Image 1 (cartoon, rainbow, N blue to C red):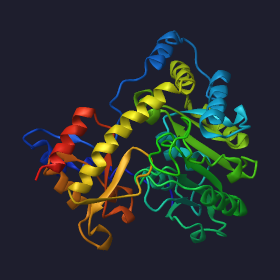
Image 2 (image 1 turned 120 degrees about the vertical axis):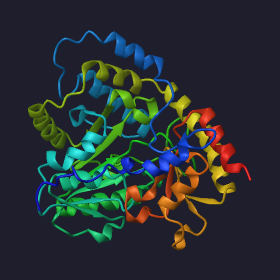
Image 3 (image 1 turned 90 degrees about the horizontal axis):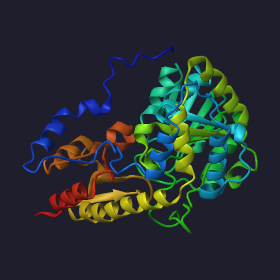
Image 4 (image 1 turned 180 degrees about the vertical axis):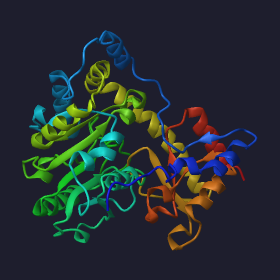
Length: 382
């Protein structure tokens, strides 16, 4: 098995033409709750930092500025409860999706190597493995792959996209112990960590209680073989900036930096400055979380009133919904998407996230207050 050519594989969202057309034909127009792109304003503190750094004639460092790396380590202490992170173990990335898609290749994986990812998962974990020529293995139970010496990379996604499920410390520790036993790298995609909605993960004193892979209770005090991927797209409305970073094991980060230097994979200097500003300002994060909470508090009961069941969804930017008989082999995710499109609401079919998601749809909270109110009205009309 070698490099996988994806040119003949349609991008999942490009297959929704008929569903999108149905939703768009609704008399009131389409309410788009599908992809999950942020719609709220980029915070002024970030825009000001970007503008102030816009005179940037020279090449920025692949490794990021010392100020950026320090801002990331400070943020981990303040917001995630992770102490002692070495700034040498931090590197900015051009959004988090490029890291997810290219990491197996950057780690020089290939034929014969296995990449483990969640059973219901963001499809780029699978795509990245196949692009490198490695074999993706969807698995939630550590026992499925523990002891396999062909496992080279293990992805964790907590809170999950699309389900909103959160991995506790015990599960994360079990993943780390099993991976270290076979010499595999563990990478946790934690992009939704600031967006917790229910106990025991709700924010306490302004800080989320969602555990990080780099928590000492998980790592045993050492980040060896561990990385966390994080994006500011969700918490700070910076999807258009492609502002993200990876942090953890300094040796792994040094390896990634060396390769990325060769490829010119560099985050622009103004974006690095904007990232520092975003990481240093907690107020806008709290404000944005409350916007999403208001929208969730409207959409969740409206979906339930319309006869849908919402599973998990204790964190993140989505509601993971199915029909009442969905768990028993009822309506498919495409059927559900078409059904909601008939109300003028566009959502994401769960099949995009693996076979285990084929009875659910993903409903995004990333729409304006007016759009969410319109969706609620359409869901609750008899």
